[in-house]
Length: 463
Ligand SMILES: [Zn+2]
Image 1 (cartoon, rainbow, N blue to C red):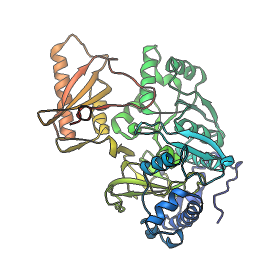
Image 2 (image 1 turned 180 degrees about the vertical axis):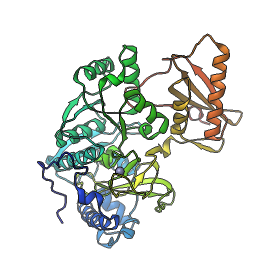
Image 3 (image 1 turned 90 degrees about the horizontal axis):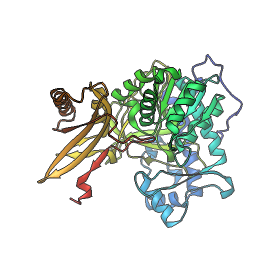
Image 4 (image 1 turned 30 degrees about the horizontal axis):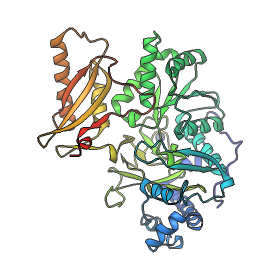
């Protein structure tokens, strides 16, 4: 076996072929696990030979790569988290001891956006970047993207790896790419004009941004359906897998919606991604191997159950991640998919992060659950914010939600009815009482990137 994988950079399948690598994508999953295991062993040996971080970690655990002979053995390798990477990079600045390739081989430096703590350096080798492009092209092919498409990449071209990864995949696939970006002042209105003028067929961004873009278009008298998009694919937030949000996106743009993405550290991050069958996200196991585990014991949970995905690179020479716990939550299944791929599925996508969960009066509440209720509720714009506070030792949840532009703001009994109905729907879903505060259309701040919807005042007060 060649390791790392060598790709033919000129290969593109016939356009009517649904798969990029038909055999690999549709094979018996057990047989595929055999191929994966060989890659795991090569990846472990590489990491052990070149990474101070893994040498220390595995020596502490009394482990040598030669001990790992089966997948069951592999499932006992110590988990790593962002904390391990941060610690390594703090002790050995700036990029830590896990680069594993010569500095001259590093082709790209990115940085995590630091939304959940100290930012980390993401260093990617030139060979790895090429393999990432090949993997993303393959996954985007599975979403239905073809060389005749134009891909409009509407995410920030800065620290966020998402935009760069989508561009790399689109270019490798042979599509026309428009690296438009997002986030600069005035850029959203500009996006409306460019989308109208250039009529791309595929859009990539975050769900929050696509919703903001649609609102901006409508304010300028443009129906987002006029853009003529066939497919919008997303990462960065769970929105595209939240049924309420997904439906709003579908109806607003009149296009197919596909969710994708794990996390920047795991690039090729598109190894979680939907196909053309609308069944959730596949775990493209031969690109990045994923297990779904119990978040406390790290034991693998059976298909059908919820847990935390743990990801392992199979083809990364630079900064390989081996059993990386990203802190996400998902339910996995081995249900058959009409697309014919035999990868496991995440039917509800990655619907939450362990960090995002707030415990209110003993109940676990996920912002994605609130989002689903608000986006499906009649009479609301879909924009919301959650404020958690504590009064006399009692947690309170306040949901601020904007009513829609079609609601008569002078009709106080109508507004009261709207508010009561949303509070009832929230209670039915969350299992706890939530206070609702109505906001006028446009009152809540919009984002051009990832939305931050939870304000936990209990933490601010140190209680
Ligand atoms: Zn499928």
